[in-house]
Amino acid sequence: MTIEVIVLAAGRGTRMASSCPKVLHTLGGRSLLDHALNTAQALEPSHIHVVVGPENESLAEAQTRGTLIWHIQKERLGTGHAVELAMCAVHEPATVLVLYADMPLVRVDTLRALCAQAQDNRVVMLTACLDVADGFGRIIRDKTGAVTGIVEEADATVKQRAIREVNTGILVAPARRLGQWLAGVGNGNQQGERYLTDVVAMAVADEVDVVAHAVADLDESLGVNDKVQLAAAERALQRRQAHQLMQVGLTLRDPARFDLRGQVVFGSDCVIDINVVLEGLVELGERVTIGPHCQVRNARLGDDVVIHSNCVIDGVKVGAGAQIGPFARLRPGTDLAENVRVGNFVEIKKSQIGAETKVNHLAYIGDSDIGDAVNIGAGVITCNYDGVGKHKTVVGDGAFIGSNAQLVAPVTIGAGATIGAGSTIRQDAPSGKLTLTPGRQKTVSRWRRRRDDSQ
Ligand code: UD1
Ligand code: CA
Image (cartoon, rainbow, N blue to C red; front, side, top):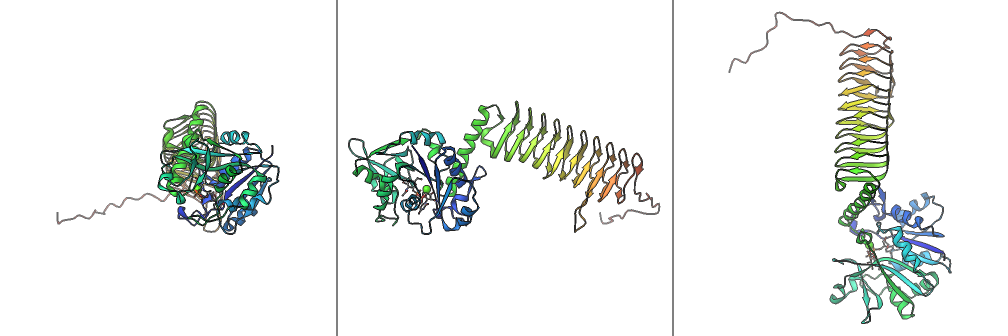
């Protein structure tokens, strides 16, 4: 059986009260649309049709995923109309699976189970039994328990609103029949829209078998229509991800206080403390520890790395055994070799730092190439920016940069050089020698401190 998926993503998203189209809001760092497309692709259908609104036309043009066919729904006339648009490009013998882009947590396995029940003379819909069914279309059954249709909340009677069995929106139907039913769907309802859900009653009338398949996990039925639901879906996704990570061996001190907005790969015995946010691709070696309140994005942390609390790490490679923080900021293009120590209130940007080097307190290192076993004292600053361009600082192996020195780039400090505390180094400093810029110390003997005689 050939499956073609239609992803509906053209809704206005009025309830989001945002200038950003609903399907571009993010969940776990990826847009709702991206979630839906990934789910669709995992099913390996012959074609994926995506129906988007006119404001997303550029998105359609920018997308290069091979199997996608984009449809622009210029006027939002309802879910039935949106599916009908895509149906023009669907091949008749296929089975159609309709997905809503605002239902990001539905599982691939659930959809597989749904598709496995598809037959020529059958409609399969995904349903849920909820304690609070507000906002959902309700499943109507006759006295024998057979499904007779779906009624939208806006059109439901008080009695129908009491029904807890709801439509998730996801539906599997033979393309040929679906096309015929859609042609007959009108907009004579409270919302003046052409509802996809009307096809269920039509299928029943045509004596087509209608199967309601209930989701096992209610999180799967979470829809995103407003920001409260967006936050609820985000929590559910985070819960699910944390659960999966713990099951394969990641220690999370508190899964409820851990957020993954991307992907993490990790070796054995890694430990993540509370309130850590991982973004993009984060790769952890073995026995990596990340302390509380850290943000780590697109980073590779080697074996035995310890990130102490309150660090921000972005676009960085950290060698094995390095210790970072607390309160350190490592910016893109930073590459730390093994056993480097970076302490509190240190910022490093676009720099290579050699093995065993220490930058322990209150320093700024930018556009630099620092050798092995260098000691960078407290308060050292590379003056890398002259107001127009950025310049490089090079520090050779074993150099010792005294506290509060300023290295005015471009400048090179030779291997084994010592720079006196408080120096402003504007020219290259030779290897193995002490270089300093002394302001001569002076004592004023006749000076008196002012006194406050009023006290
Ligand atoms: C829909 C269902 C409802 C179900 C609920 C589950 C209909 C008529 N109702 O209601 O039975 O319980 O989902 O979440 O289908 N869209 C378009 N074009 C349109 C209108 C909508 O592409 O003209 C897209 C939206 O982007 C969204 C999806 O279709 O992804 C559902 O639309 P929405 O307006 O959110 O429908 P609900 O009121 O939630
Ligand atoms: Ca919805």
